[in-house]
Structure formats: C-alpha cells, structure tokens
Image 1: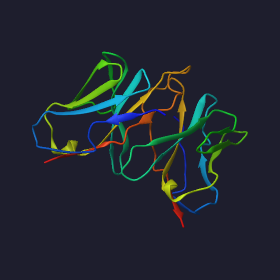
Image 2: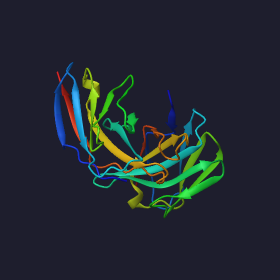
Image 3: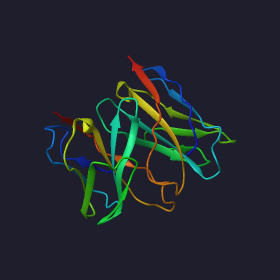
Image 4: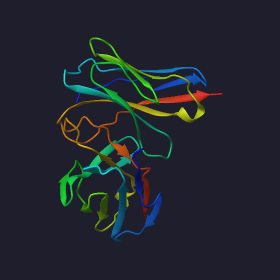
Length: 116
Length: 111
C-alpha cells in the first residue's frame, strides 16, 4: 500500500513565524502535491513537484514555498505565517503513468495548522 | 474537467450494499471517473477509477453507464467504518494536476 506520511497531525504556530510542513512517501512516486482544505472552499492546490528540485505553482502559491531535495520528501514552507493560513494541509503523491494525470493521487492524513 | 452531480447525503444499513450515484452528463471521451472518500479528520483516500469499463477492486466496484453520463460506486457490504464523504471526480488526461473535489455525498452507515 502507498504510504504518505505527514510529520505532524496538529501544529500551532504564531504569526510571523517560519513554518515547515514535511511530507514523505514510500512508493518512489515522481509527483508530489501540497493542498489546503478549508470548509466551503474544498481542496486547493498550493504547489506540486514532478521531479526532484522541480516545482510548479498551483492555484494559491502566495505566501508559500516548497522544497524537494529528495524524491521521497516534499516540504511546504510558510515564509511568515499569517492567521489566514490556518487550515488543514494535505500532501499527496502519484506516479505519472501512461497519461499525465490519469493516475490516482494518494494522500497523507493531513496537518491541521493553527496560526495564532 | 466535467462537472459532477452527487446527492448531498445517503444512509445505508451496515452489511448492506451502498450504491452511490454520480451524474457527469458533460463527460468527454478522454475523461476518467475517479472516486475518493474522506473520513472525518483524515486525508482523502483513493477508492477506484475507470474510463469506460466497469472496474472492481478490494474496496469497491465502479459501474459506468454505456453512454458514460453517469456512474455508481458500490460498496458491497458497508461497515460503520465506511461512513465518510464520497467524492466523484472526472478528469481529462493531461489537464493538469489539481484535483477538484466538489461537495460529495455524505454517507452514513448505521448499525
């Protein structure tokens, strides 16, 4: 079974702090993703990566950056945390497959981040 | 990606089959149908996907109508642990990587 592990289930940080969210997958997947999920807004893509050191902006990249130094690890960084970044953060991974996006994404259990 | 329509909520008795419908009348020929579910306070879980043919795996079966305008996810013997929000998504291959979850169907499995 695919295992996507997020480093923390719950995290509380203060406004202005630099926050790191870590994600590790054990299936040698090329693609990795960071989403945030908010009530009424559904899932929104922040960034994704299709290879080591490669990254692409998603729909809401402002205030975030990412790092992918190793294939299995994808980090999300909040450069200067703000209260509007309080959310559930979800990491996912997938293999490209024959069609670029017809392979399913497998998700971690999420990190519920609160910025005070 | 094609729009999908799902009922807001459904109930199912434990041990019975849960049949979750999804309408996707604007689906195009190269769009896949995916099902995910999300149990409260957990990340979404992939269940199954298909293009034209019916599919079955250890979790569920996916029945796609011949005209592909609707599909049904079948959980053959629902358990209390199947209580979750179920999302039907249709996606064009090579359309980009973001998954767009709609509101889904909230399935309640009762004893």
